[in-house]
Length: 191
Image 1 (cartoon, rainbow, N blue to C red):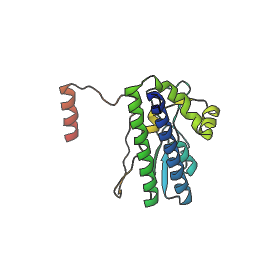
Image 2: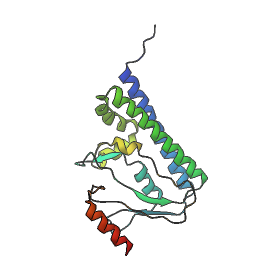
Image 3: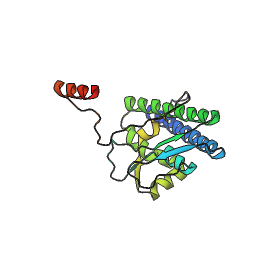
């Protein structure tokens, strides 16, 4: 007679396997980029010296899965950059994004079926990969930031002629306006 493992144990094991696949696909993407680096650009808001879009910069951006000590749990860090990707690199990005989606699906099942597991997940997953755990301990990084794990890497599927970037820094992107304020703004656009 075989017994099914406890549902929470099975859910955790599935999530751990999905995390492992995410790390493996990310490492493959990094290896592909390092083998044939292409034109790239990186930007860090508020920095006087801008980062170089090296393989190390890409590694830091793609493996940034941690909260910094004292970081507000609702915030995530942005890594802004553009990489002119060939077909091999695009295939690797697609594999990473698929692994991120799989991780997110497993995480959603856990949130629905057994929410108390979330605290254990944040404690257990960093130990799955020793190099990530060493990075976690040595950099003042406090715990796993699950949202950073499942956010997809943006991709432009078609050739790009021009790129425009826009973001907000205040933490609020929606502002309530009166009808009169909207009319003034629209009239100002017309002049």
